[in-house]
Image (cartoon, rainbow, N blue to C red; front, side, top):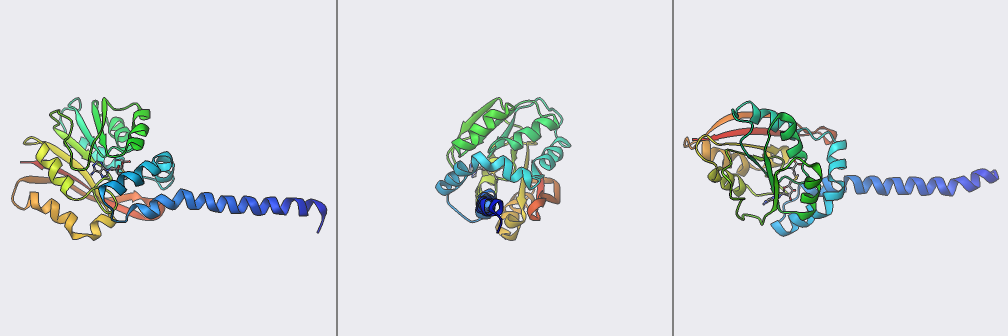
Length: 226
Ligand SMILES: C[S@@+](CC[C@H](N)C(=O)[O-])C[C@H]1O[C@@H](n2cnc3c(N)ncnc32)[C@H](O)[C@@H]1O
């Protein structure tokens, strides 16, 4: 082997090894995200994921926030009414809502690290760290978003009931269930608890892309409280 190749090869090997490790790191959170966990380990997962969340979901084409924002916009008359982004994470959902034209957005989340990312987006009026199942900010929201929040590895279906109860009559909830959440019949059963008895009207239910980079889709829903 020529001298220059002998010098380059160890370096090349190092580059390949480091790149492979980096790629494992970059996809590691999505691999782990959809396993069932309690509130404490959910917070821990998102605290750890916060620094690389935008890059990882962005490179997989995260489409659900814009789909939810457009679906909600179709059914909201007053775009200046304050809206709550529940489980706002690093603020990708708030950004999509802002881009769709919602003017006043408040955010809440379990994870302080995710909330730091949301603060940097500069689209929220206020941001609050909450406990799982804890009180929501004391404001009269006529619309609430829970985008990418309910399902395996994140918030339980009880959150849907908490958010629906917090809305006034004619208030709207936009939310999504990805394909993993849809595999568990408890999630759609939670929606039916509201619609079957007429306590809410289903305005939107659309299946479409969630993270196309990993071939994952989601349903987007808009419920109107009756
Ligand atoms: C997949 S991220 C979605 C974040 C953001 N909505 C988006 O679309 O990018 C799920 C977020 O929900 C938050 N979360 C999970 N369970 C929650 C709960 N019970 N209450 C509030 N936030 C919760 C997590 O901390 C995380 O930031």
